[in-house]
Image (cartoon, helix red, strand yellow):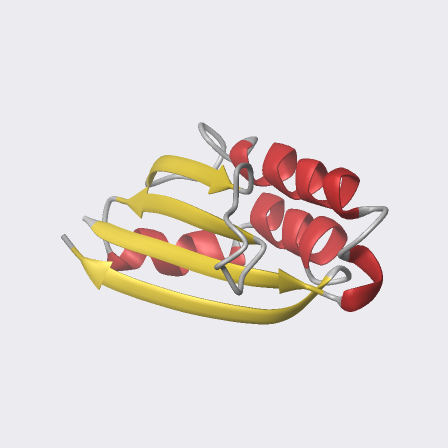
Length: 101
């Protein structure tokens, strides 16, 4: 099993008025990958109740069956479409940590 953790920071222009809308779109579209991407065991986006001490706006916490499943997830058309449409246009910083469990 592999944990795939991502932290994102929104671009400044989306960190005020449109923040809730952008975060809701990211959460909805990433969590919709459950049951779609082979080998994706669990996926959750955390973007609510974020404390002021944080320097990221949201976190993806996902579990995949294997390193091979993670590689497949990265190029799966549904994941690429969600990332290209709902994440990359709105974020300026992305940090990733993948590890075996």
